[in-house]
Length: 249
Picture 1 (spheres, rainbow, N blue to C red):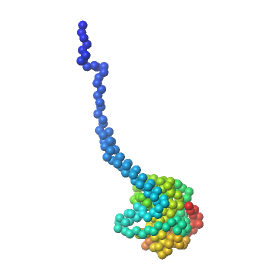
Picture 2: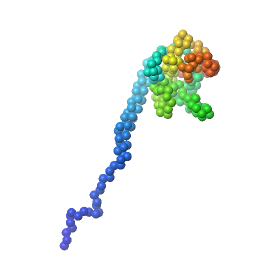
Picture 3: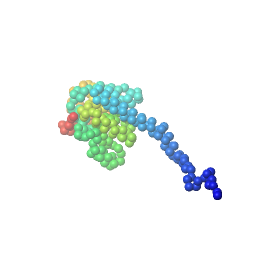
Picture 4: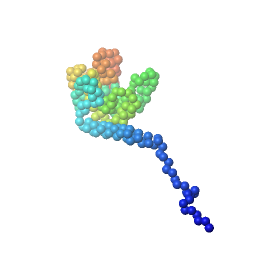
């Protein structure tokens, strides 16, 4: 009789072989560890910082913005004096709302109808001439971002706008907006603008003066040197006609 050898390899149960991990897996792991993870941490940290600053600025005066920082870095001087909501002329608030964001008190940070109108106007003209941004969006950009146009910046602007609308009421948003808006070379805020152009406080601005200052907002550095510009004067008259219809927070 023959004995079955115990050393013979079994054909029925071959030893499993470990397949090597694909090279793409190692590349993805490297990208995550050295690029994606640090970038994610940076993005999260940036937004946590914004939340913290919005929390502080919800009760304390805002004396700085990204636009002011950029101006200083370029060697310019900044003039800005904070004034509370009640120390800003009602006419200035009315002018800001009717000119920049007629639905300010009713939307949640975004004017969908305004965005759609802006898209149609820009498509018809073949260039981006109308932005459709609300006061909240403009303030988010002024405080934390730059004027550089890109999809990334618009996305960040939208995120910050949502956070701001959740943390601040409409009165605070309008108050801060009027205190950090640019009204000329190094002139930030309605108080500094009132003092520079009219030698008076923002609380004492007349209807016409408020309308003219707000009319400058799209291009303040140009209009600072061209106060008699026909387009600026036409916009001032339109704002003055619409001011009584403004709904303030």
